[in-house]
Length: 152
Image 1 (spheres, helix red, strand yellow):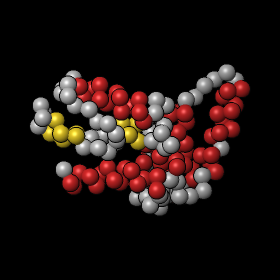
Image 2 (cartoon, rainbow, N blue to C red):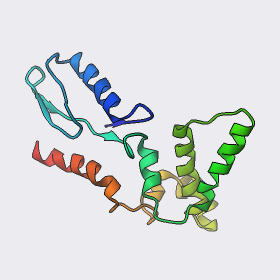
Image 3 (cartoon, rainbow, N blue to C red):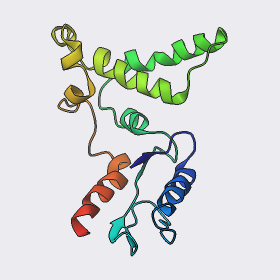
Image 4 (cartoon, rainbow, N blue to C red):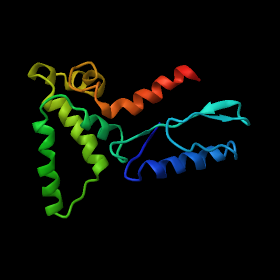
């Protein structure tokens, strides 16, 4: 599993294939979620690339399936604009990671939980709350990939 980042799905798939060739020169995954036999290694390999519309990473995907009001996290857009106005930069990757953290801590935690934010407002805790739409079609490809392990 690899993040598409700002390189995109196809470029990441190329990177995966280049890496696989160091183990088996004949090995090539033509598309994500495809299982390919390696005769040399005696295993099947596959690759899933986390993305939203071809780019991004896990945090981009989480951002796209948020299930609650995200006012605090969305206000980061104004902060980003302020940074640009002061000749400072933040990457989309950094912004998405920060967005998820702010969403978890400020948009999704109660006052009581915030007193123990390190435990009650982190990613692990947020996965147990109803703040993500795990039925979102954005997760269909990932679910398909994970279920494919049952068939290999």
